[in-house]
Amino acid sequence: MKIAIPVDDKSMETSVSQSFGRTPYYLIYDTESKESVFLDNSAVASQGGAGIKAAQTIVDSKVSALLTPRCGENAADVLKAANIKLYKTVNASIQDNIDALNDGKLSLLEDIHPGFHGHGG
Amino acid sequence: MKIAVLSGKGGTGKTLVSVNLASAAKDAIYIDCDVEEPNGRLFFKPKNIASESVSIKIPFADQKLCVGCRKCIDFCKFNAIAFIINKVIVFDDVCHSCGGCVLFCPEKALTEKDKIIGEVQSGVSENVSVITGILNTGEASGVPLIKKLLNNNLAGKELTFIDCPPGSACIVMESIKDADYCIMVAEPTLFGVHNLNMVYELVKLFKKPHAAVLNKCLEGENPAEDFCREKDIKILGKIPFDSELGTLNSNALISVRENQKYRDMFSSMLQIVAKEVQHETVANS
Image 1 (cartoon, chains in turn cyan, orange):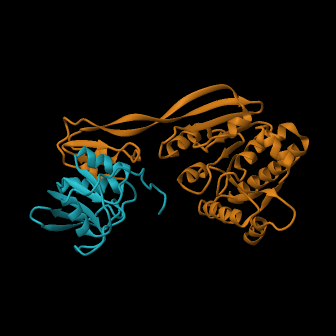
Image 2: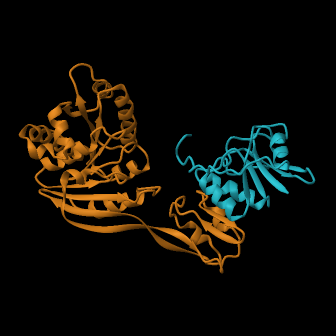
Image 3: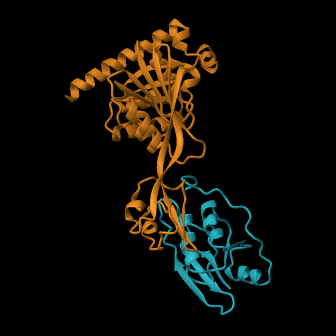
């Protein structure tokens, strides 16, 4: 299964990013082949609608699941329309979260926030 | 003569000042551009209300015509469009109604549809024509509604008061754009000075003639007054922090219509404004 995780740097040792829409990079990881690819997030400097654009990138990378600490409403709408499952990360470690997913220990992300449009930054 | 009344934050006294100045005039138009929470009408209680809904254009996709070229998605600066499993999804709330996506669509799969975002209500309260913009709850921007309010009502030469939204963002810029004069309302605190400075920078940027009204004034120090002196901003008047005015106002009464003392206070402010605007017109011509 191919999954996506927002990450702070292009390395397996880096941390899971606190933001889905405004993360600098995404890790696209194949849980079977264990292959990893890092994508730039072209939405990071968007004036608005970063979540929508970022979600489009994730949909286009054809993953089945997204592991993220949180996700905004608009991004979640795009991801759900593409039948991508949203899981809530347990900590900042990429490997811990992949292991937890493989062990079936990650729970689905339920609390979708309404976004920070023009606020909090 | 179009006079905009603005302030850096809510609750400073924009509505108090604009409602009372309009009431103190012989005839006036009052336009409430604070479309997210218009409250001038609570004081005026206008009669013979006529309503007109205001809508914006947003793109609508014909999925059968779309070939998935994504030109619209690449064009949209606001990322209001996504393409998921061969389907165009438009995020109405993120769209800024520029119409670019419709122009760029090579398949003519995108057309525009109307989306109602609010309404304009017009009525009369004694000597004042009261025009109110009301934005529907949850709408992202009041700018199209304010455009409509001002385009329809700023054509004549009548004395017009524009009650602005708080702050100094787009909706305020839209509200003061065509004003001849700006009145900044400020509170006598350090926080008040900060907010006054925000709108002061804005009116300077727009090169608008301006002056301040100091509200809630007490005896003793007044940082907003010091700021006005320092920046050489004309003070039109000082409204005292008194319980009589506060009581009238919290009962949604217009103090000018209730008490000669307040009529005199606002009339004298109005006279200074009239003189200032004439002076500006002469100076600019």
